[in-house]
Amino acid sequence: MIGLLALAMFVLVGSAVGIRLVHTAALRGGGSPAWACGLGFLFICLVGYPLSAVSGVGLRACGDVDLALGAAGLVFTAAGLASFYVFTLVVFRPRARWAWAFALAAIAGLGASAFGQVGAIAAAPPAMPSGEASQLWTRVTAALSLTCYAWSGFESLLEWSKARRRVALGLADPVVANRILLWGVHGVAVTALNVFLIGLNVATGEHMSEHVGPQVVMAVFGLVSSATITLAFFPTEAWKARVRARVARPA
Image (cartoon, rainbow, N blue to C red; front, top):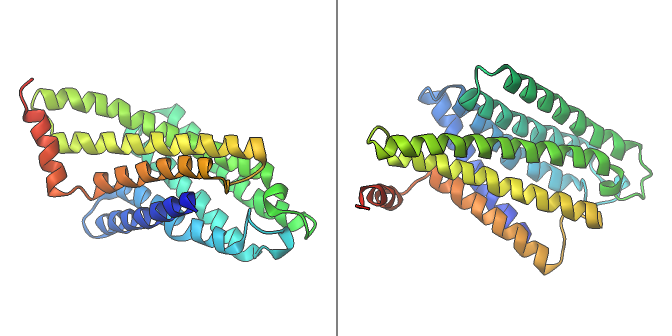
């Protein structure tokens, strides 16, 4: 229950961030980064996760899963992750050929795994648990999700290390540098959550545990993720003042 509440908070916060970014892209010329990041949050948080949950994918027997809703949820989640791959690519590595090849391969893998899960559930005996039927493809999706957030977190923290030096020289806004750091921490937190969920699935076959310990772990990672994207995209005046004061404080 604790983990589910943290996940629900992430879905709400991610949806709000997605709406804001898409609004910025559409009306204020935010460009491809705003579109990619905004659609990533909207596809996953506002559409993908809720539809997958309502459909019963991973929760019910195959015969009880609403395949139409499940397919939509899985495809939108894959599209959201694909959008985040595009975001990392265009923001951090737009001229790197290896990054283009890497992102395109990952996006192709996400599409294959989404349809693979649906096909596996449709072809399985009605009484088989849907999580068991689609386990292989679910792990492929989880691995690609882990890679997505790990790449994003790594690139963001690398860029933050450069921005921090520019801030020290008075050449960059400390709030902007802090937002890059927060995005990087978000990537690390979601990566760690993916590692934990994959490990849980491998060890127990469960997508989410009902035991208190694992629920607390999931809640911690979920709350860190929600807090960092909130401060990155909705920084309060108090938070911005604190960040600037920390830089201005004499050593």
